[in-house]
Length: 572
Image (cartoon, rainbow, N blue to C red; front, side, top):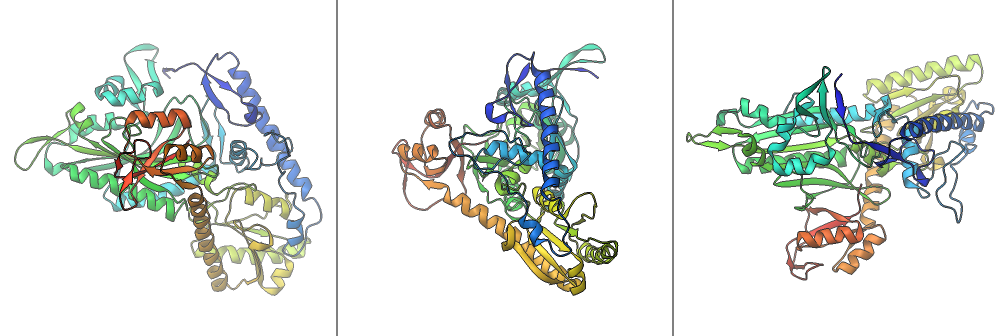
């Protein structure tokens, strides 16, 4: 293995992050890093053990032979905030309430829902099977859409010559602080430093130059699923890590109009995915000049509001113009025999979208997944007390499982005997499974089941006496999954809209941001004024939304006429 020369970083543990599996990182002395990481690893394992013990002890009573409504009532609710006290790490293994400490809640959910763990290198994470299954569902949807719109998958090398990065001035300026460089290979100093892929525009253009010669070679439209390395100074699992997974699309076109159409088409694909699959009501729009991707002419974005009212840039599509093609000499001969530089786009969604799903839909019981993206849509919990009851219950459960799977529903049967039904309820609620089916001896005798919705806790989400007859049960389950999908989107939309404030002056903008809201108002001020807003409020222009109000507008900062409104918010 060659050596990777990276900046020296150390772990900083904030009071609110004490005993958490993830912390923020910043430049500092590295002498205590190993001890800190060891402490964090030990803390996570101790807390996981405490949670398992707490869940077992809370439901260690006798097992009901019915639907266990009584068992559900006996489950211990998560701890509530104490008056007059700040965020304190839980010592009982329970999830920190969102209202008490949103960041601690987020980290708890990732750990307890078994989505990810952290790697031995500071700021990296290991995506566990359940978390990766969510990513696979994202891939499955987007792969279909990419191919429907004419794109092909391929793969580019992870190592990029440093000279490639230097060719596009704004690109190297934008990414230089985040680069990881390989300087030694095979025990020898390399003649040229290699960049560990932060994004692929440069190496893509190097190859496009070899593949594109004539207008007949256009458009060239490809996508790759890959990992990316960016040496972030402050990290947060899924949201911002040193290495993450993403897809990045790259296209080359013969005209600027084709490139613009492509950039807008792909942000529309992302928007539909967010609404229809992830149940996240994003706001699509155009980035300001300051927030535009390094090397792009225009950047389009989808902005999502998280549960703490911060904005998350959930996906981007860039019209690169001819910036990279001029830097790399990527040209083609047009129909008139003239040499022209190609017009390009690039666009991406990453594993940060998983973080967005967590922070949009999760609650104090843990993860809450929209059915269309959930690795497990229905969990079946069989309940028995005697050996005879076990046989009858499991026979019924097997037939239910077969009927649901035949209908294309993702089902998991939890027939483990080491845990009580109450423990299982807690566990699968933590993992965000949309719908639970409970089957006990009395249910078997009546040929019915009980269903329970994850998005409607307690009796509100329970339905009794649902027929086991396959056509009836499948219809019921499909309808409830559709209801949950729609409910989560409506809930997130209501939350978003109630936290966006229309403003007409800078004072109103500052007041809205101070309250944690998003501020929407007319804007035509300078880049300097935009930077002033960021410095004074911590908020940035998230986008100029595509959906713009009609009528004359006056810039909230300069008092001059404004053609558009912008959305300002603090963000991740």
